[in-house]
Amino acid sequence: MKISMIQMDVQFAKPDWNFEHAAEMVRRAVQERPDGAKPDVVTLPETFNVGFFPKENLQGLSDRDGQRTKQVFGSLAKDLGVNIIAGSVANLKDGGIHNTCYIFNRSGEVTAAYDKTHLFSPMGEHEYFSKGQKLVTFKLDDVSCGIIICYDIRFVELVRTLALRTIDALFVVAQWPKIRIPHWQILNRARAIENQMFVCCTNSCAVAGEVKYGGHSALISPWGEVLAEGGEEEEIIHGELDLSIVKGIRESINVYRDRRPDLY
Image (tube, rainbow, N blue to C red; front, side):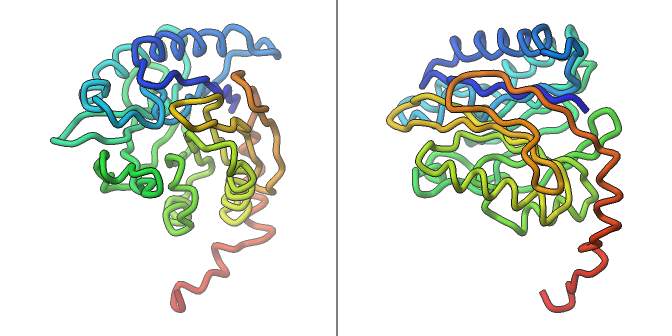
């Protein structure tokens, strides 16, 4: 599975600019891949429509039940023939604002949608957004996948629950600050190693509001090997997952068989 991650410089509280720029970068990701092959999956970062996150007029800036996201990225996925993990958007639905990730298949259909379940209380996210109420797995090109958003990566129970649903690849979309990039790198590698799966983590970069975001989007193997990694600036990071190795890893060190759920 060929992956292209868009490490985007998200402009704070400028949804029109962000949607246009994100769509342009998705096209670039498909057209400019160094190996000349079209990616199977293109990813974007968290709240790419508004940044993380404008408190003033958040409701007015938010998408409406994903209408714009579906129009722009559903059409792009179909036109380009790629799967798109459309980061996440501030999204007004069900009487509240949700931090929602929409996932599109090659036909432009929404194959899954996930609302962030763990809201980042240190920055007051829980005061403006509504918590998601369900975990989400899905398939892209017959590959079993899971999705989480930013702060979710700190919750081992969430990721292990997804892993027990037999996913082989976890997608993480984030706006992770530069000051805590060492945590970002360690947590994503740990989740890959302990759950014996690939992790594709896409972060934003540059300054949004008063926070500098740290980039370092990465593809990580089930052995914890970093297969591809970005720097701190806006760029598109390309890599490939050899999903055939997952079964062998899980058989050689079978942590799933050796678990003791009777004790925990």
